Amino acid sequence: MRTCNKLLNHAEEYFGFVTLLGATFLVFVQVVLRYVFNYSLIWTEEMARYLIIWFIFIGSSIAVRERAHAKVDVLFSYVPPRIKKMLSISASSMGILFCVLITVSGWQMIKNVTQYMNVTPALEIPMYIPYLAIPIGGLLMGLRFLQLLLEDWKKVSLSKEEGMEGEKRL
Image (cartoon, rainbow, N blue to C red; front, side, top):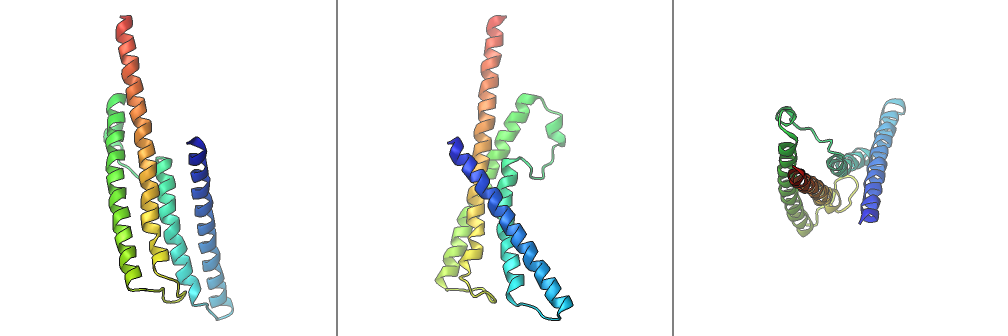
C-alpha cells in the first residue's frame, strides 16, 4: 500500500509540474509572438487554459495530502487535542462527501458532453478531455481525504488506548 501511495504522490507531483511548466511555456511563447513578432497562435491560449485547469484539480489533491488547503483555525487553536482530532475527522468526512459530489457531477457533465460530441474551439479535441479533470481531481481529493480520515482515526484510537493504560497504572 505504501508503494502505491508513493507512486501516486510522484505521479501527482510530476503531472502538476509538467502541466504548470507547459502552461507557463505556452503563455510565454504567445506573449513573445504577439508583442515581438506581431503574430499569434490560436491554440496556445486554449491549451494553456486546459493545462491550468488540470493543474488546479491535481494540485488540490496534493494540497489535501499536505493539509495545505485554506482553513479557519481560530476555533481549532483553542480546543484540547482530543477535540482537535475529532474536528479533523469531521472535516475530512465532509471533504469526502464534497469530493463524491464533485466526482458524480463531473461524470454527469462528461456524459452530456460526449452525448453531443462537443469539441474544443481551437484545438478541436473532444471536450470530455478538459472536463475529465473534474472527476479525476475529485476522486484523487476524495482518496486523500480518506487517507487523512484514517490517519486521524488511528490517532484517536491510539490516544484512547494510552488513556486506558494510564488509568490502569493509577
